[in-house]
Structure formats: structure tokens, C-alpha cells
Length: 477
Image (cartoon, rainbow, N blue to C red):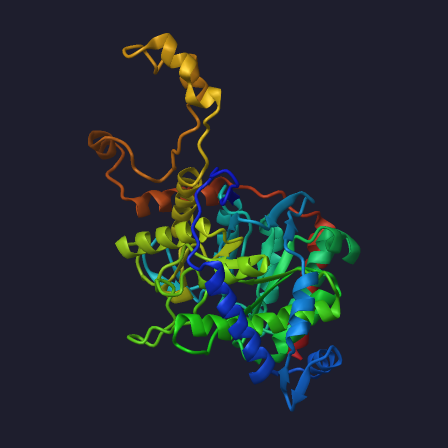
């Protein structure tokens, strides 16, 4: 975890939008949700919103400002996730930043062959092993969409792998409501029951909403289900909208506000994380979704902080198809900006080609850059010990500072990333003249050979797998 925005300049910070800009975007979102309305494609959600004070014309619901303000007043300003052992792993609040992988890449850039290929379930297993081993990854996601399982229930297989191959918090994605419900069922089995999981949730659902003004049925069902159980959710509308970055942000946040209102109508105090990336601009040169566009950085995240809500951010990803200079620049800039702005749960580390391709070595490289950013944004110790005036008085201009006990006491203060080459040229030659991608691939291989995760108890493994088997039988009928 990295914490920025310290009260006494104890850490670095940055904000793209000021309070006046955020207020104007907020007012625009209120006008949209109050006068234009949002399409709500679920009857139960529609009924609940109308009962709470909304006005409907068919499937379009208009939400008055007072409903929004009431929901914002009771929505938690934090989101806490535990690990499977019951320890707090993520406190998404303030300007604490946590990092993890992404979900559902169709292709993998195979670090053994250098070739792009369809992802398999074993790639999900390997991705979870790597994410569990990397020190700067605070949560895990599936990384890949396996092509060797039934595509109708692929997410059930992913969840089983995530529960078995990491003890870190899980962010899962499901294409339908049943997938969300079954993922929670499997997590409750591991936790020891619904009450135990509610007290210490170690998994949360990334809800993909069609866009700001179209709330699809599956997203609404997931929102209400999770809120009803008192579980955290990531409610993320992204998609269509105006091409101007401010207009697009207001458009998407109109849908965000509807999601916050709906969750609080179901159960006051339901934790909801909102988008920490977006601006929604499509690349008009390629007409493809783009991760590296500078325009969209910092907008949604500023609005999340404006509302005081936890955010689900995105960084450590690239539009490049190979591990090249573009990759390095895009992952470094995105990670740095998300951290300086205080993004909370930051996902998609290791993603390439606009989310179509993933790379295990790139995950390892991201781990190094997060470590670098941790040191680059940290506060400076200006206490008596940190300023070392006694040492300077003792040794003077020509003293041997290197062998002094003060150096030994602080020798681990510096940043020494594992993959960044800081050696001399001769030493680099001796070590095989490897570039960073090659060093990362070697480290990944070592992780896959050596890293062990404490297995779930056999009866728990059996019960989790029984859920997947039940689904497999159902779709075969």
C-alpha cells in the first residue's frame, strides 16, 4: 500500500481537477440524472428507485437531487477487504493506493516462446501464482479468459482457481448475475459461511455497467444482490457519451450516482467503489479502446475523491503488443499518476493491447515500478535521526560515512528494484546481457517453480469444486 497526500507534506500528491471543476461536473451529473434520466433495464430496480422518489417514463428513471444527496450522505467513505486468513489487506480510503492484476484477457504473450496465443485455464493458474508472489500486488484478478473451458461458465472456473491459488483479496468479474451469485457462494464456503464472509469479505465484484445512461439488467441485479448482503461492490459505468473529457465524465458519473442511490436504497451503508479512470474517449484514429490516452487521466478519480468514495482505478497497462519502450512509458506514467492522485484499488497491471493480451513478465515489471513509486512519493525523515547531524559533526568533511553504524542502520532505506539494471556494464555483460523483459521472464519462471500457496482444506476444495461441477452439469443438459 502507498499513502499519498500527507497532512504535513509527508508524501507527494497531485490533482488534475480542483474543487471548482469537480463541483461543475457534479452539477452537470445531477442535471443529467434529474432531467435526462437513466435507462434502468430491471423491473425490481425500477420499482425500488420509483418507491424511493424517482420518476419513471417506461424504463427511463429520473432521480431528484435530494435522493442523490441522501445516498451520498450514508454511503461509506471506505471499503475494506480482508485476506482469506482474516487480516485486513485493503483499506480503500483517503489516498491509500493498492495494486493488482486485471481480468479476462483473451490472449497471452507467452514468455517462453515470445508468441501471442489463446489463453488457457493453466494460464489463469500461473497468473494467480505470480500475483500471489509479487509483494506489491495487494489483490488478485483472473488475468485471462480461458479458451479450454465451457465459455458459458468460464468465470466459475476462474473463481475456483483464484480461491485455490492465492490468499489475497479477489476482484472477480462475471458475465451474468448467476456468475456473481455463485462466486459469492464459493467465497462463503471458504470463509465458513455467509455471516463469516460478510464480517470479513475477501472478494468483491467488478460490475461492468453498459454506460452512464444505460444500466443493464445484470449490473443492476448484482448491485442489489451485493448491497442486500452488505458486501462491497465496484460499480463502474463506462462506455458511450460525449467526446469532450468533461462532458464524458459528467455523463458517466450520472450513472455512477444512480448506482450509489440504488445500493443505499437496498441497504444503507452498503460499500460502493466508483470509477477511478475514464473520460471515455475512444481513439478516433483507430476506433479502438485505448489504455494509453493521456486525455482521460485523472478525471474520474478526482470525482471519486470529490464525493469521498472509494475508487477502482486502472494503471500498469499498455496499448503496445510487445514489451517495448511504449510499454515501459505507459505503465510507468499510468502507475505514477494513479498513485499521486490517490487511486485506491488500482487494477489491470500487466495488461497489453487494450486489454486483449496479458503478460506475466509485465506483471513483474509493474511490481518493480510500484516499488520505485513507493520510494519516489514517500515522505522524507527530517527527525534528528534522519538529518544525521550528530554523524556529520563526528566525521566532518572527510570521514568514512560508508562504514559508520548510521549507514548500516539505514542501508535498507533505499530503493533497490529487482529487475532494474543498476550494475556496471562489465557486470551486466557477466550476467548475460539480459534486457528487463528477459530478466522478468526469468523471475516469473522462478516464481512458478518455487512459490507455494497454502492449500485450502480438502473438504473446502471439494465443496468449492462441487459448485463448478454443478454448473457444468446444468449447461450440459
